Each structure stands twice: as structure tokens, then as C-alpha cells.
Length: 122
Image (cartoon, rainbow, N blue to C red; front, side):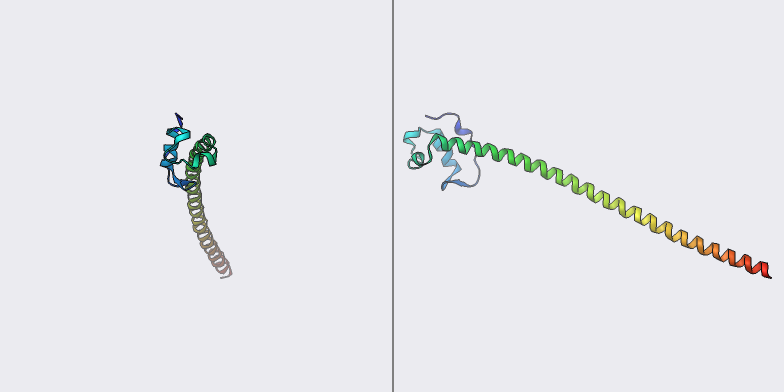
């Protein structure tokens, strides 16, 4: 009788057409007289199949953790990118305001210069 392989987590999907619950049942019963999957045991190598399922399940858990970590990192990078775009827009607005002020001051300086030249001629 196999003991300790009942760890295999219950997920959606199937293995060789059998639900995960049936695979867990197989892991918890006697390998030679499994009522749940009698024809599956010899075809798949029995214990080897269960170990592969366990290893794949553990790998899926690891991949889920990696996906979660990458999703959080992507969110943080997206927020940082948006903040950088907002900062850039604010700086562009400042440049536009200063450019307009410069143009206005240059026009005023030209007007004063023209007025002074006109005053000198008179």
C-alpha cells in the first residue's frame, strides 16, 4: 500500500483521461489491486507515474509562484512607467510655459528697444 502520496493537490484537468481525484485515489490504494484505475497502473509504470505526477505538481506550484512574482513585478514596472510618463508631461508643460514667457519677454524687449530708438530720433 502506498502512503504519503496523497499530497498531490487537486486541480482541474486530467491525467490519461482520469480526474485528479481519481489519481489521488490511486495513490492512496494498493498498487496491485487499485479499484479506481486497474488498467492504468501497469501501463504507466505505477509508482513511477505517481512520482512523475507529484514532481509535475510541485513544478506547477513553483511556476505558479514565479508567475505571481512576475505579475507583481510587471505591475510595479507599469506603475513606475506611468509615473515617469506623468513626470515627463509635467516637465514638458513647464518648458512650454517658460518658452511662452521667454517669447513674451523678447517681444517686450524688442518693443522697448524700438521705442528707445524712436525716442532718440525724435
